[in-house]
Image 1 (cartoon, rainbow, N blue to C red):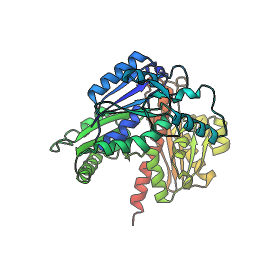
Image 2: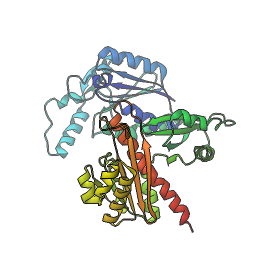
Image 3: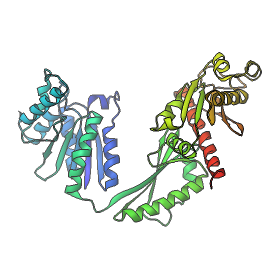
Image 4: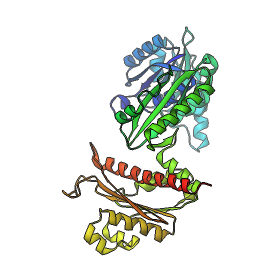
Length: 420
């Protein structure tokens, strides 16, 4: 039940395009019990593809190949496969008909050169009528799936055809059970120290740390023939990990911090307005990236200039004169103004210096203030963020997530106070 993945394309090995297909396949197949010997990346080169196929077939029971099935001159995967397996390259009548049907469905004739996609190794099994893709089987009964490089098409074939076929053929006795949670506010090394010894006494449980800036994801995994029992064990370990991390776990599973905030806003029946300066609408972008956010999110104002802060939020000129746009006082008035003007339960504001210019000795780059206005008043928060390469974008991301985390913590307290 060991697999191997080959990703083909000059755009991949040159770094112009990031490979998404292998990551998706690994994420979908590994939890089902499949293990992988290697992930190989090669350019559009006959010898390189042949070498990758040799290596993969030596290591694995099945191989997934993606890329190089289009209609341009650099799409040579089918030719390379035919050459490697000693098969003639022939036009697949089924593929030709499939292509014609697909283009006819959108009112177009088959474009010149599209027939190239129907040149397949003789005996290849066409996978689907909606896109390129075929299967070859070696004399040792190893299935080799050749999938398109376009991520949407690749995933559709993987989900609809490849995964069911692999499960039917290999039927793993054990599956990989995992639980993931997201931490904001601590780095990997600090998280590791707090979780030291968490899995002691539980052989087979592994802990993985995966940075997804500006957060850290932690995954607990266990390969088991008893998924229900393994899941219960991992849930108890996640609970202990959350206790050790003292409120820094901001999401579970596939959820993000924004998902957590949205769920709690809806559960509490509260509404929100945003006032952003240095983040330029990023907080609003994260919030509205969650389906159903219209159930609590009223509006977001990007008040970048002092004039905008005064005209749209009612920030007092004397506040700006005395304390500056980047200050706790201004953040408080921005939050209160957003809440007042929108008539919402909560107003959340952020103002700061994202850099690389604009900092002073008193307020260096990375200085950010936050305000959260509610019925009981306004709470402010001050942070100084340190950026690295691309510091401006990093400071904006850190600021947006800190604003959401401030809101998350308020909602946790609000739920406790109003719990029956």
